Amino acid sequence: MRSADFQKKIRMRKTANLILFVVDGSWSMAVSERMSATKAAILSLLTDAYQRRDRVGLVVFQKDRATLVLSPTNSVVLAQRAMENIPIGGKTPLAAGLVMAYEVVQREKILHPDVQPLLIVLTDGAGNVAYQPGAMCPRSLRNWRACSSARRFTAW
Image 1 (tube, rainbow, N blue to C red):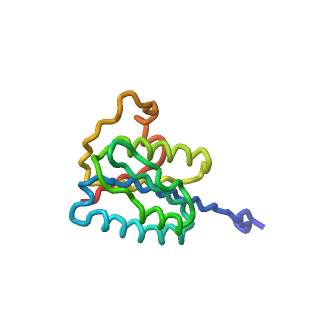
Image 2: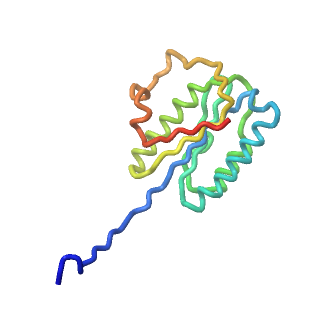
Image 3: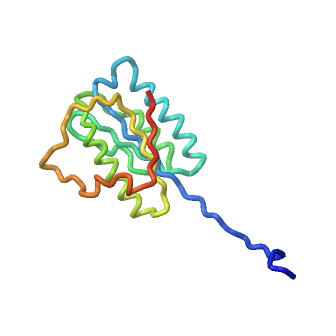
């Protein structure tokens, strides 16, 4: 017998993804049916995420704040209900939305260390509300790339 005759079974554990949608709910997104196109895109991604057993969350930013509309979950039904009631109107606090997304990802990394975060930001990119200087901004926010193996894509 040689060492080449032995086989070793290697078990690979599948890691779940955290798909966090960060959606602009300002008036500029309500123009020309951008929000309905955004909702349709998210719903199609939700079914795909369900089939892979990924966790899905939803952050909406509008007026002067960001809101966690849907905490990360495996339930597509909860996600669809949250999608129906996305508030629309006001200005675009893009920085607040990104900070909240960062906090949600950090919390999920603590609860589920193997999770791979995927952040999908749906906005027209016209942020017009500065981040509140009095608000606590995480020090490690500058190290966004270090908190995950994030890949960046830009769609026009």
